[in-house]
Image (cartoon, rainbow, N blue to C red; front, side, top):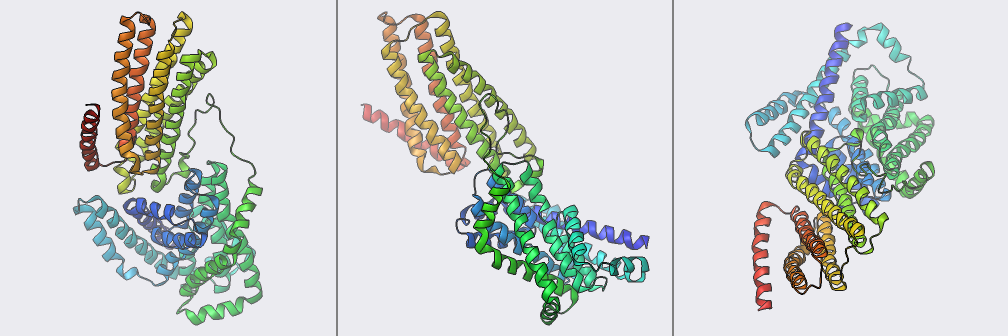
Amino acid sequence: MAAILLSMAGGLGLFLFGMRLMSEGIEKAAGAKLRSILEMFTKNRFIGMIVGVIFTAIIQSSSACTVLVVTFVNSGLMTLYQAAGIIFGANIGTTVTSQLVSFNLSKYAPIFLLVGVILIMFCKNTTVQKWAEVLAGFGVLFLGLSSMSSAMSGLKDAPAVMNVLESLTSPVLAIVVGTVLTAIIQSSSVTVSIILLMANQGLLDLHICLFIILGCNIGACASALLAGLTGRKDAMRAALIHLLFNVIGTIIMYFMLKVGIEQIITMLNAISENPGRCVANAHTIFKIFQVIILLPFSNYIVKLTYLIVPGDDESVGYRDSFQLQYIGARNMFSPATAIVEVTKELDRMGSLASENLNRAMNALITLDEEDIEEVYAVEKNIDFLNHAITDYLVKINQTGLPVEDTKSIGNLFHVANDIERIGDHAENVADCAKQRKETGVGISEQARTELGVILDKVNTIMQYSLDMFRTQDESRLRDILVLEDHIDRLERELQNAHVERLTRNECTPEAGMIFSDVVSGLERVADHATNIAFSVLDEEEQKKIHNMKKLIHEEENRIDE
C-alpha cells in the first residue's frame, strides 16, 4: 500500500511539474503575442469568449488565463465587460487538457521528453528553447499520468481505499471534495485528469464523478480570487465573475443531474469509448452548456459583482501615495503581464513628474508656499516609484519573461531614470522659487513670457512622448523630433536674449542666474522626454531616427537662412 501511494505521489508530482513546464514555456515563448491577441479581440463578448477558449487551450490553464485577465483589469487595459467573455471562454478551453489525457498518449511521452531535452541542451536560440520546454513538459506530464495510472490499478486490491471511495455517494459531498482538492492543487485540469484515471480503473462510479467535476470547476477559481484580493476593486470583480460563473453553472448542472443523470450518462456512454472518455466529454459538455446558458446574462453577472464589491477605489493624495498602483503583489504576478504593469506604472510616474514640473513653474512665478512644499512631497513619491519599479524590473528579469518582453527591460530601466530626472528638474525649479521668496528677487515680464513659451513647448513634447510610450504608437515621432529641435534652438535664443538684458542692466545677476538655470533645466526635460519616446524603438529604428534628426536640423537651418 505504501509503495502504491508513493508511486501515485511521484506520478502526481511529475504531472504537476509537466503542466507547469508546458504553461510557463508557452507564456515565455509566445506570451507577448498572446497578450496582444487578448488586447485586440475583446471588444465583442462573443469574440472575447472564442479568444478565451483558444488562449486557455494553448496555455493549458484556465487559472493562468483568468489571473492574466485579472491583471489586465487591474492595469486598466480591459473593462469588466470585456473580461467576462474571456473568462467564460477560459472555462471551455481548460477542458482541452482532460481531453488530451483521455486519449492516453503516454506511449509517446518518452519521445516528446527526449526531443525537448535535446533542444534545451543543444539549441542556443532562446525561442526554440522555450518551445522545447513545452515539449519536455508534455512528455513529463504523460509520464506522470502513466505512473499514476499504474499505481491506481493496484488500489482495487486495497479494501480500505475501496471502502472510502465506495462510501462517496453524496452528490453534495462529491462537489465539496472536488472544490477542496482543486483549490489546494489550483488546477481543475489536474483534478479532472485524476478523476478520469480513477474512472478508467473502476475506482470511482461515473455517477459520482460528474458531481466531483462540478466541484473542480468551483475550486479552479481559487487562483483568480487570490490574485484579485491584492488588486483594485475591478480586479476583485473580475475574479468574482469567474467564481459566479462556476457557482451559478454548478447549481444549474446539479439540478439537471439530479433530474436526469441516467439519461446524461447514457448519452455520454454513446459518444465515449471508456469511462475516462466519459469524464473528459462530460467536463467539456458541462462547460459548453454553462457558457451557452450564461453568456447572454454576462452583463448582469458583471453588475452583480458591483453589488458584492461596491464603490470605487479610494483616491490617494500626493503626500500619502507611496505605493504602486498597477504592479500587484506576488500572488497577482503573471510573466505575460509584468511588462504591461511596469508600463502603466511608469506612465503614471511620468504624469506625476509632468504635473510636478508645471506646479514648480507656477510656484516660481506666484511664490506660493503650498505649491513649493507640494513639489517636494511629490518628488519624494517619484523617487519612491523609481526605486520600487527598478527593483521590480530586476526581479522579473530573473523570473523568465516572454522572449519579446526581455528585449524591453533595458529600455524600461532608462525610462524610469529619465522620468526621475524630470522630477529632479521640477525640484530644482522649486528651489529657485524658494530662493526668490527668501531673497525677494524679481522676474521681469519679458522673462515670464519667455519662460511661458518654452514651458508650453516642453509640456507638448512631454505629452507626445508619454502618449507614444503608453500606446507604442510611433505616429508622433516626427512631431517629437521637430519639437526637440525647436526647444534646443529656443533655449539658445532665450539664453542670448537674457545676456543682452544683463548687459543693458535690465536684469539683476541673481534673477539672471535663476532664469538661466530654469531655461537650461527645461531644455534637459525635453531631452529626457525624447528619450522616453525613443524607448519604444529597437536599435535599427533608433539609428534611422538619428538620421531623421539630422535632416530635421538641416531643414530648420535652411528655413532660418
